[in-house]
Image 1 (cartoon, rainbow, N blue to C red):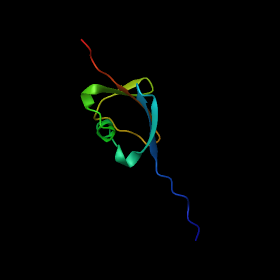
Image 2 (image 1 turned 45 degrees about the horizontal axis):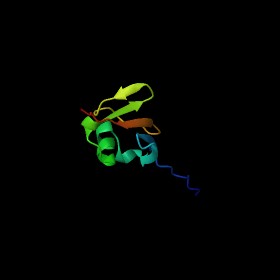
Image 3 (image 1 turned 90 degrees about the vertical axis):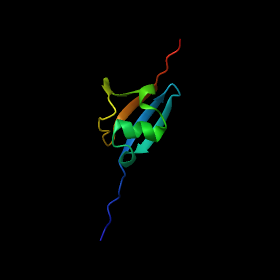
Length: 76
């Protein structure tokens, strides 16, 4: 019996301002909230976008997503 190759779906994350590209197994980050926890980033300190759409913490992260995580801070 031939075995089919098994590929674990990943999510590609571009982390700014560091300009890091990360490949994360999707099963570890099923929501935006879980993604931020995985990255060690507090929800109130980052914006997450898929294309031109901003995502709230309750939104699902889909297999093969390309996401932008932009850390934001206020100064003043």
